[in-house]
Amino acid sequence: MRAYLLKYIMQFIPVLFIISSVIFALLYLTGDPVALMISDQATPEQIAELRESLGLNRPFYVQYGIYMLNLLQGDFGISYVYREDALTIVLERLPSTLLLGSASIAFAIVISVPLGVLSAIKKNTFVDLLISGFSVVGKAIPNFWQAIMLILLFSITLQLFPVSGEGSWKHLVLPAITLGSGAAAEIARLIRSSMLDVLSQDYIRTAKSKGVSNAVVYFRHAFRNCLLPVVTVMATQVAVLFGGAVITETVFAWPGMGQLLVKAISVRDMSVVQAVVFVSAMIIILMNFLADVAYRWIDPRIKYE
Image (cartoon, rainbow, N blue to C red; front, side, top):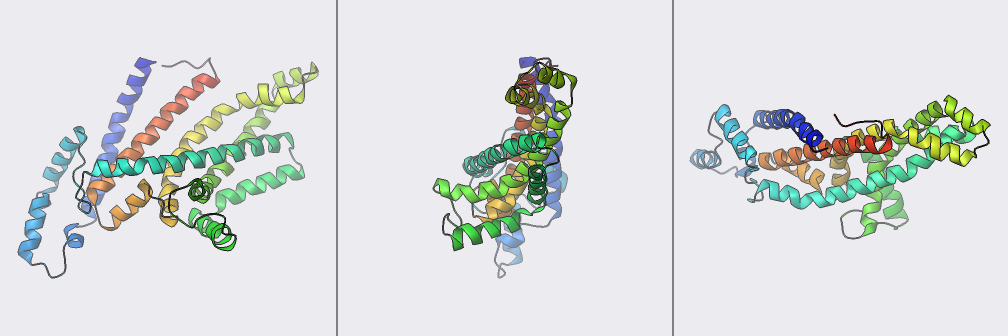
């Protein structure tokens, strides 16, 4: 296990290097952040002085070299806006994003597992058609539109949940539903197809012919064997959730990394953008590793290599 973990980490070092380099190059090409940091009445001398103090007057390759050297030491630099360490600012927002992500994944699992299993058991019935329709609609609705509709219905009309912000479990409900509904639809469809494939296997027919109850056949023999592709999709959905969190956190004013990223991009706060992207990449890599561990737990025949 230790050797596998070390090998896994070594494989992703080049990935993190490429991600960091691409983000740096894209931010460099988007323009000079000093233009957004200084007033219109500033003199050319003041602008030049600020650019020199931030190191932005140096050539691209010099800035890139300093950035990579600092990155190796875990230093993302100082935020132009907050005047604090960029990584510290991002890590302060990380718990809120992890809370929202965990809640949305929990919502997706609670909704998708029973619907997917029921859809497979009730194949080609009205129930199957209804659940399939839910999956298509859930996948097709854009996050921002769904968020606005939920706010209009549950916050403004029924006044059941707050419109925005963070503070209690009620603040978490609507953002988690918005973020998790797409994943729920995707996972429900996958569970249905995987269950149908497993239920057509010979050992399932053998179990039924021996008089094994349907509950045991469906949940002990069939469900566990259909989990491998589901785990794979759930790991990829984490990346999708973090992408969607940018929109969801902005709409609901949820104080997480997504909202911070939008603000940082709007003012070209390069250090914060780089730190947010790097931390997000690390979380996605960690989730992929946990998915590999889950494979081993679900199917003991799978060995670490």
